[in-house]
Every structure is written in structure tokens, then in C-alpha cells.
Image 1: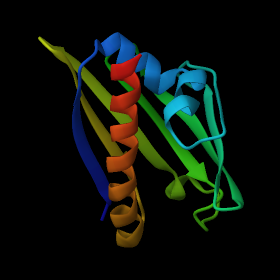
Image 2: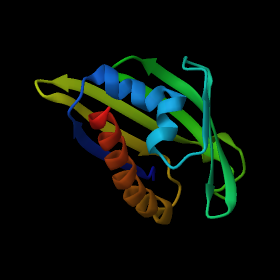
Image 3: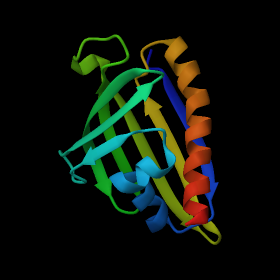
Image 4: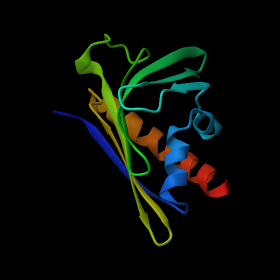
Length: 141
């Protein structure tokens, strides 16, 4: 069974501003608890997140699958803090779908292939926090 999270949020800003916030490494570190992001911002390019959980450093190694500004951004990744081997079946994917409306952007997030129910439950709470941070950042800039 493929374990997936899907979240939806409304952001009072244009899809272009929201898209830039989720793809620009300098902006991502302004609102997500990440220390560094490197990205090629092109299909087939890399996206790498570095941070710490407590005192333990981690790196998420990703490959961009869709870079369709300002409608869709998707990447697959493997994290060295999940206790799994770096094999294709252990890669997860994150997809952002954006659509504009009269007062901003509807953003749908899907985080797929979470592997365990425990990870799915934990990430559901984390995404609530992360999407709130994204919304606050975009709406105040």
C-alpha cells in the first residue's frame, strides 16, 4: 500500500509568488527549518536540503521531476535520516500543485511513498506546520 499525505491551503498571493517561495533556495530557508538548500531548478536537476533534527545533521537528496512555473513542482528524494537504504523503492515524492483564484492561490501538497504508517502520521503534523510557515512567509513579503 502506498502511504500518502495530501494537504490543501489557500495563500493570499499570486501563484507566481507562491511558486517562487517553494523553489527558490534563498526563500525556502527563510521559512522552513532548513539550514541550506541547493537546487538546479530544472527537470532532472538536483534539489538538496540540509538541516538538523536536534543535534543530528541530515541531508535530503532529491531529483526534480516537474518544474512547471507557476503550476506544478515535484521532486523525488531520499533522506539519510530515515534509516533506509538509498534504493529507488525508498524514495519519496513531494508534489505541489498551484492554481490561482480571485483572491490568491490554492496549493495542494502531496507527499507520497512514506513507507510506514508511523512516518505518514508524523509527516502529516509536520506538513501542517510547514504549510502554515509557507503561508505566513508569502503573505508578509
